Amino acid sequence: MIKVHDKYFEDYILEEEIKKTVTRIASEIKSDYTDFSELIIIGVLNGSIPFMNDIIFKLPESITIDYVKASSYGNSLESSGKVELLLDTKLDIDGKDVLIIDDIIDSGLTQRFLKDHFSEKNARSVKSCCLFYKKVKADYSGIMIGNDFIIGYGLDYAQKGRNINRILKLVK
Image (cartoon, rainbow, N blue to C red; front, top):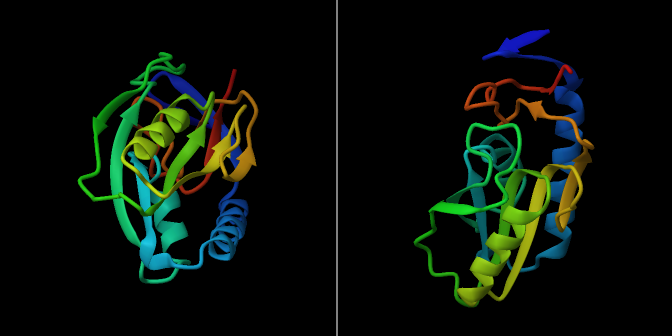
């Protein structure tokens, strides 16, 4: 058991399962896109960094990457229900394919917000990708975790735990 701030967490998903899931998702992405020079991969900071890095290392070198920062959680265990865009991309995405990579999708609120945001910027297509999901799947989805609160591999509790190489779940 690991203590993070005032909460206790235990092992839930090991590194090996994460690696297998990343490989499967990268294969799905590679089979769906034909022109990787027209693909812009946009990671949602901060949680997507480990997952996005593992995905992009398995894709052709011609992709373009950037980041946005959007939040609906803050330091809470639950979503506020409102998405705040804290940092936007400066890339010209007009006529390009956009793939949004996030660590986890819970209600789909942030995913819908970002898909709409990039569609309004005239992206040719906008798809989403996540390693974990609760209720709503992405176009490329990893592991369903139900209602568990998890940390590790980019996911945090009040900005701590992102650097754990496996997934831990909150002990209730």
